[in-house]
Image 1 (cartoon, rainbow, N blue to C red):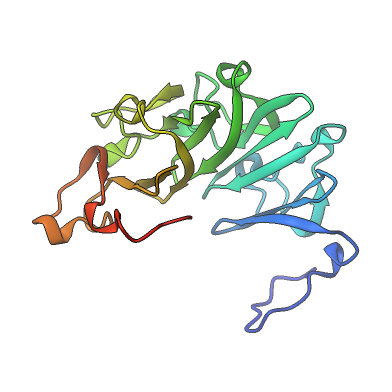
Image 2 (cartoon, rainbow, N blue to C red; image 1 turned 180 degrees about the vertical axis):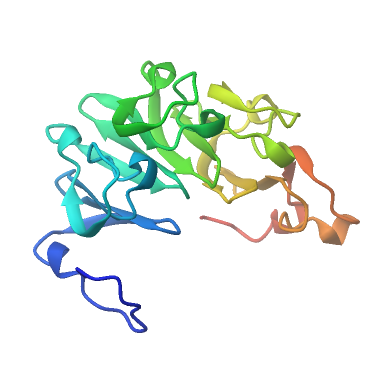
Amino acid sequence: HGNSKDVYTPKVVRGLQSKLIRQVSCAEHHVAAVSETGVLFTWGRGQNGRLGHGGTDNELLPKVVEALMGSHVAQASCGDFHTSCVTLNPMQVYTWGLGLSGRLGHGDEADCNLPTPVDALSGPHVSSVACGGHHSAAIVEPSGHLMTWGGGAFGKLGHGNRLAQTSPKLVAVLQAKKLVAVSLGPHHSAALTQKGEVYTWGQSGRLGHASQGAEVDEMLPRRHSLLDHVGVCQ
């Protein structure tokens, strides 16, 4: 809204009032919005380059990510310290912001102040991306396979260990499932299959498996059998 005051009731973002916005993603300190025409806007805290404007300045108003002009942005996701998006022409996954633990997927831990292609995802068609506190994920079509990368604490990447992964890696235990949605928290992950099955993994205490015994960290995706007949769609 052009200032840093708290707002206690919904208020129109005037900088976007003339735009048709089809998707929004919020993190603790920044926001991204995608317009119907595929333009990406970001604003909030600019630390580590998470806004994608080429620097680390804060932005109090929505600002177009100029580096992606000409590429139709289909979807964006904000993590605590980084951001990602999928473009359609050409199809490409971009990430930027804090690179610690390899969360940007570029094979290293360098920060990026501008949207940078994730080369490992240049071949397959990616339908959606997600950013968590320290890790990232993407769903690849038409298989519906899940790729994860970044910090591996508590097993939140789903690879059976707690190791960091600096490039996208297939979550092998879900290879036989067609995934349609993925969501990442600071220390855990969740995914939804085409059949409505819900899987969670990562830090205990937030995975929803307590009814099946004392929760422990899950380093591999574990299905919620209690939700099998609920008809989960998102």
